[in-house]
Length: 86
Image (cartoon, rainbow, N blue to C red; front, side, top):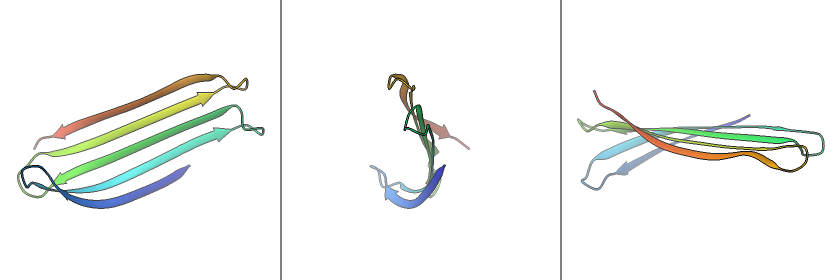
């Protein structure tokens, strides 16, 4: 498992200021010969507004699984944004 994070600041289209404190987690399993192989990546990034604007959360999840024959049996990417109204 590999973990990471970053701390960013930005300005939206209408001058709204946001801070992003992001967390990444990557997990993988691999056989002795490299197969079978499974990899999952998850990124959760809260977009925290400075002021009364709505906070949001940006999410990414990717997964791939390759069996012992080298065939991809699972492969997907998901991206979604949650609004967090107070």
